[in-house]
Amino acid sequence: MSDQELIELIKEDHDYLGYVYKNNKDSCISFMRNMSPKTSPDDLNDIFQDAIIILYEKIVNEDFQLTATIQTYLNSVCRFQILNKFRSDKKKVNHDNNFEIIVDKLNYDNSIQDNLQPIEQSEETQFNAIERALKAIEKAGGNCYELLTLFWYHKKSVEELTTHFGYSNSANTKNQKYKCQKRLQKLAINYQNG
Amino acid sequence: MDNKTKEIVKEIFSPILKDYFEISPRNIDWSSITNAFLFYEKDAKLVYTEIYKLEPKDPEILITQLSELYDVFANQMAEHFVLDSSNSDYEILNNETNSIFKEKVDFFNVLKNVTTKVERSRIINKLPNLAEHNDFSISDNDIENAIKKKSREDLKNKFNKWDKELSESEIPVYTLHEEEKLYSKNITLEKDNYTKKNKKTISRSWLKYAAVAAILITSLLIVQPTKTSNEKLFSQYSTIATNYRQLNYERLTRTSEGEENRSFYEFTLKNLSSAETDIALQGLKYFHEGNFDQSKKLLASINPKNKNSKILLFLAISQLNTNEVDIAITTLLYLENIPDFQFNDTVTFYLAISYLKKNNLKKAKTLLQSLTDKESLYHNQAQEIIKKMRWF
Image (cartoon, rainbow over all chains, first blue to last red; front, side):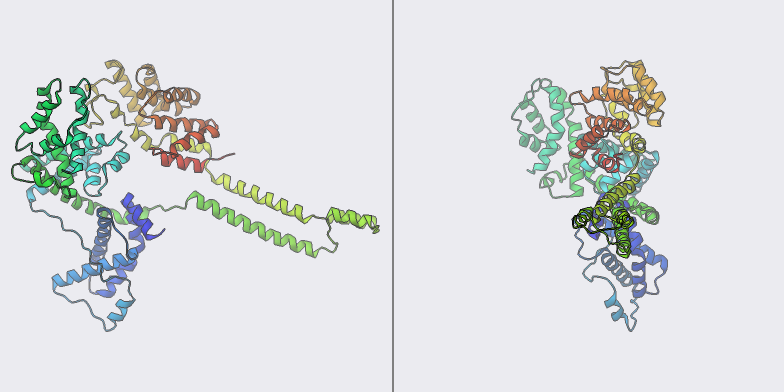
């Protein structure tokens, strides 16, 4: 399976991220360790997982065209994240005498500087209330949680949602989404006021 | 005005127009109606004017619904604005007076961020498990091709062996034709040599034909057993969950589609009395639990034929899953002939697997093919079954 084919599969079903995770983790961690041997394994793991999320959000949010291999992309994103981390921590990247030689041999693209989009929480009370309401809806069962997250995060179209849930037509899907949102909003208001 | 905005207004308005007009009005000025909606919060009378222009039979009742319709409109516009703010009409909506629209935009912005946070966390937690459980199994096609290739290689090796045996043989090998020629030239052979020759005369062309036949038979014998038995296919596909989700029984209600918290007892099913509805719903409950004996019993008791085709479909599937295949086929054929039946594809699919169970493979394949030839909910399943079907 080519990387572009895998990208198409991930667009359809994010469970295919497991394949990317399994096949690229060791190389990415090794790449980052070469770059920054003092970073803890847990931090390296977190950076790699964030890189997977960055890749996924690129795939679903935009017309993503892979200009390098997935491995190169992930390495580049991890590298950029480490550089950012060190800039903010005011630490320097470990420059081994042979670092430039090592780096040349490593698989990354300098031009890739994708980052995790920050989550705005300016209206903290409202944010917390909606988050709490969403988790309550998830726990309650039914289709609402999946419907809302597939639409708002995974960027599924109404037609894709209609097929996924087996609704009879798009109008019914929109109606269901509308009701789920109303339900969520009501619950969130209760949490906010209660 | 953006066409997307007009489409949203049309989609919201069109279904309700038939309730307010004896004959659906022609030449509706959707641009004017859309424009009026965009300014609804500033001046609702613009929409009233457009409504009165259409001359509905109860304009006041329609007008009382406008706030709800505007809510749906604002909802959709706000969603599109948060997801992709490229619509030029947002400039009109996104100002101080449009508090309903702005409130929805605020809510959806936060909802978008909340779902991002929650889903990122869920995916990250799930990643190691996904890596363990990803099943990228080789397709049946690849298995078949690999087996064919190996079989051919094995047979070619055998050819080499046979060729070797032939070349090691002391007695020359001739075709029968050549044997006759030799006789006609009066070459005298001793009887035992002649007998030996006949026994050892092996036509190479016959050998080739036998080898080709062996390849074909071996390939079929190897490949066919790897295909799933049709009985097993029937069991696999007669009860798969996605089929049931597509026939969510809550969709049978007249008034709402799959509303989650609605009690069973707040409505009656189409053409069924209250008592019959109770029985039908209990039957459907058994159906969803996989208790087809009970669902069949209850659904059959209300005699849904000529009353409620959707209930009849559930009955047919129950019959199929309790070994009453012939009866199920009769029921499904009846449903197949109902014009504009909402679950036509479902009927076709179950008819196909009924024929599969009866080993009527030609009919099964024709029906499955019709599902793969179009955009059907059963497209992928039909394709899978055709691939896996055993032909003997």
